[in-house]
Length: 319
Image (cartoon, rainbow, N blue to C red):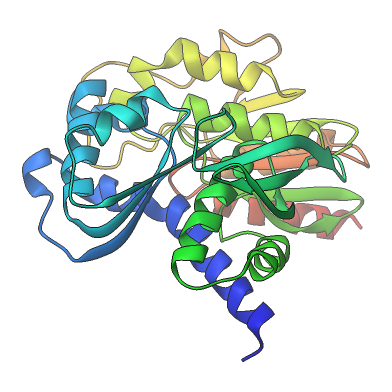
């Protein structure tokens, strides 16, 4: 295997792991369910309220990440810019603590951050104040600058050189359901993302709007009644940033709708927001109204990717 391939494979594995971390936590319903596992390197990008419906509140989320970090046997790589992440590792000793971020004082730092090709991050990579190499990402979104810093720190621990790290990060073009481009049909680009919390939706739409499309369509499937009820205003604010916002019925998953919440309560808070119950209705509506040069982005933690496939099928029928 060529060294550049090794760097590529490692970047893909770690970036996919960073994004898939929520799956692990989603399968853990309470702090008591965090079981002992062998973790050599733990990369922690950010701790926020995205999991507060499982752990009660932000303090519960921080405690869960702290317990997870305690299971690490060698190195903890963490976002030094994020106060909640710093709290999550307080009191942990006997491991190497390696920080990354944009601010001075981090072990790994991105300087001269800018964008290329619309929404793809690029920057100069520094370790402990020493310039290593120039980095250019193969995935869009400002949030992936921080993700890639975590990748770089972990890759070096695994023996990668700065050039291998740079080659690998540039060659990585995303994991499934992480701003996954599904194709262009009738000059309309379709993409799908797992974003299911207001913070993630905001980051995803921000990245989408910088790609140069005529208009961005945000199609969102809320996941769980409790989360939807808790973050109605935040969901509306996040989706308002798109040129067109459509919300489907809530996927209740394990829950009964004790809150009496409905997706229309989100769209009622959005100027021009549209509520359509089913994916079939959404696909028909989008196919009838979308224009050449638009980007259609499906988002949610459930099966909204099926809606993306339906839209593609409708567009194929029209072409």
